Image 1: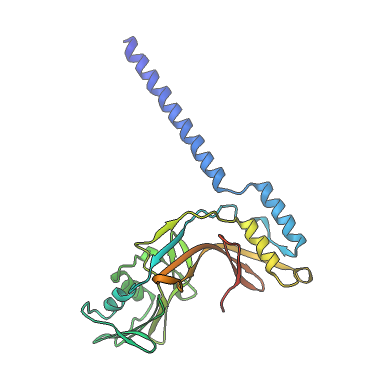
Image 2 (image 1 turned 90 degrees about the vertical axis):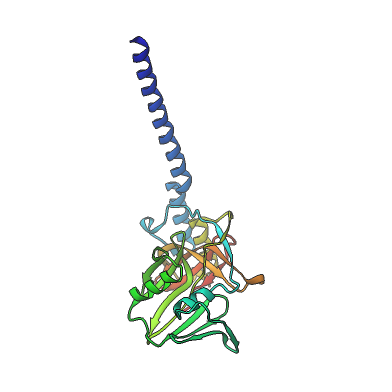
Length: 260
């Protein structure tokens, strides 16, 4: 009886220790993924001296913890074109504007590494039908978010800047990446504070005008013009102000104006 009682006590102690260790581990992970409050306050104060203003509640405290991704774009959208045209036997035709697929259901033009245009004889009526088409082509519905009447493709739940699909005048157009076989690389990333400081340095004559930051969101910056048919998705930030928006590369710190 004494041994049975001792085992019960021992099990209870071990469970308590495991719970404590789990709590400590979770706290450590949380602290590593969050910016310190005092650090944020100091960043906000320094930014204000450079003419860039942001409220603390608009300052993301979550650190950016995603990887740089590279993937092959060689014939990447051929399966999409054949699926849209419902004919897996179609062969591409290389013409001046790009690569064409033509069939009984319409035509698909592939231009560049990731851009497509689909003119269907029976076009989709709304984005729900477009989602169904993309799902048939191997894309998951969770891969897209709907924004401003378009479908925005995401990677690890982060929007890929410029990778959108839209339906206008019965024409389906967009830019898509097939990320199933992507290769990840762990790069050291600058945090939000340093991204905003890079933004303040990039502004033309920042001392002459104040800029209020309304939102900072993580994005993937997509480069499809690389060598050997490779696309690169680099972690970054999109900084929205009352005057417009810009993009900051989280690996290099380079600042780029947002394309209109």
